[in-house]
Amino acid sequence: MGKLKAALLARKAAIVDGWFDEALSSYAPEATLFFRRERNRFANPVGSGLRTGIEAIFTSLVEEMDPEVICRHLEEIIKVRAIQGLEPSRAVSFVFGLKQVVRQQLKEELRQAAAAAELEGFEARVDQTALFAFDIYARCREQLAELRVNEIKRNVFSVMERIRRGEVLSGPPDGEKEQIAE
Image (cartoon, rainbow, N blue to C red; front, side):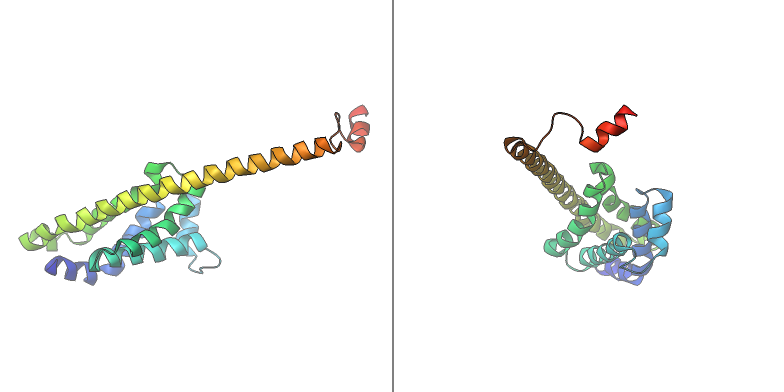
């Protein structure tokens, strides 16, 4: 990936910024503004994590396509998106957005046959990254569902224990009886 790799690395900052903006497009406008403006990683852990992850994934895609590195950073991004309840397509669509950003940033370079031919390999790695992202999203959603089921089980068990000990009353607590009567 000679000519393309050189062009991607030369425009890395612009591509990462464009990809970050693409990833933010799945959020509400006010959140997008905050994620874009606030650079402090403690004040803005979602935006900071997203920017850091995108940059690391991009570097790995350009350099050597290390699935372990890519999946580690994808997991941090996708986990947040799964918790936020984004649909699978919205949660992982930002990965495909990298293709468009690269094509926009490298219009001139892609007119050369060598770079255009190399683009196919790069885009195949982006597609593979999207598949990793979808698998991670599915795994995160399964974990969330399991946590919810376990929480419901704990709550039911707690209520059953209180009933067994005779702590659960059939009506509202005494203080609430007076409020209801008024």
